[in-house]
Image (cartoon, rainbow, N blue to C red; front, side, top):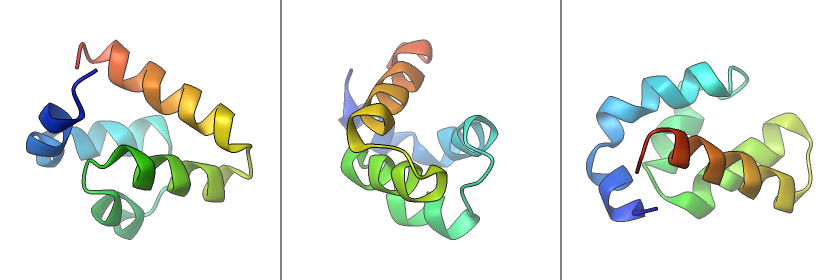
Length: 67
């Protein structure tokens, strides 16, 4: 996964992230700004899941997008 690409394309990808994690607010997505650790933290917080599970979900999401 290339998180530099994700950061560079975040405006296009943030809608897809909101679809995947519907509990994320617009502010959550804006704060994440394509940064993996920020996105993992927001997913973990909103869904009340462990960090390793949030990381797994975020990595799977990025892989699905071929990023």
